Amino acid sequence: MSLKEPDFTIGIEEEYLLVDKDSLDLAPAPDALMTACKAELEGQVSPEFLNCQIEIGTTVCQNIGEAREDLKRLRSTVARVANQFNLAPIAASCHPFSDWRRQHHTDKDRYNNLRDDLAGVVRRMVICGMHVHVGLASGDQRIDLMNQLKYFLPHLLALSCSSPFWQGDDTGLSCYRLTVFDNLPRTGLPPKLDGWGQFERSVDAMTEIGVIEDASKIWWDLRPSSRFPTLESRICDVSPRLETTLTLAALTQALTRMLWRLATKNQRWRIYDNFLIAENRWRAQRYGLGEGLIDFGKREIVPFSDLVEEMIALVQEDAQALSSLAEVENTRNILARGNSADQQRGVYRDALQADYSHDQALRAVVQHLVDEFHADL
Image (cartoon, rainbow, N blue to C red; front, top):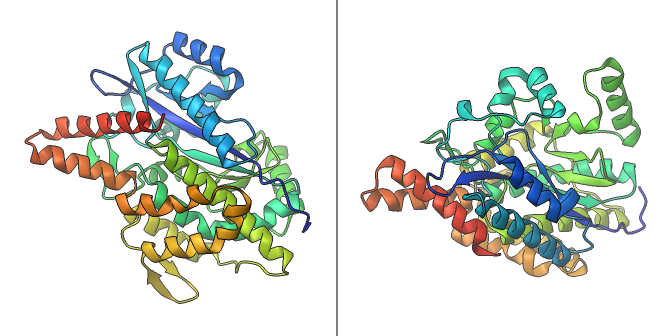
């Protein structure tokens, strides 16, 4: 693996749900809304599979400061344009009470093909995620760091969880999104690969058979991007607050650089079997920040408060080099106030104690998500 320092550029993609400002239920994006957003944001905004969704993506950013400015502009523009149609975006991975059976997919060839290929599974995809791209020019380097970085995916997931409710019920999970997404093929943790050549041969085999058109139909939690020279993390729920998104992106970038730095010293992170990492993935999905994760070296469950301090110490040198130490240290604030799933449940409980009905309490949660989206803009 090349020891020349990569650029470690960063790019962030987010998917939002659109809600009616009066009913707070999901609402389709009018064509005029998409037209207005595209006029201002050009190639940085697009429709998603369902017509109640909208997707944005930053430009290639040199550091987290650039990412903040671009993402703030994107979020602000979507919110302002949506308001003209009495709509508001929320950055949560599931809507607390809307019924997926009432949603309709966007009428485009790509999405029509998805509907035909994935049948009933894709109809439930009323979910949103957040993707972080970290620039790595070398294909072999992307694969090598992917094999190591996947150990930290449960940590990132636990911090990001924003989908505790589904169709009006508290699921008991902090991230219900993955229970829906994991029904698709070619999802979950990436396999251990020997190098870029093996990845290319596997993709070529699938495309030649006609099972997939290209590598963009590989939806692992962490993958080499099909479009850019990047390693793309896809594990996280989308975050209601801008600053939480930036912290998760900064952590992903710093962890990637830390693993590269180990290689410069002829060291590497121990590669654990997916069977073990998947157990932590489930713990993060189920409990969020509440019950800790397994340290397989110590063979014990470690509280998330300890894991946060370990991660900050682990990447401190890298965060300083990347000018993102403040964002990385904001992980402590996420832990202190709880992830979005914790906060949504808190709003729901408080509303019930204030004599709201179940339905009114769920609408209070959606209003909270609308407010959170605008909080950092």
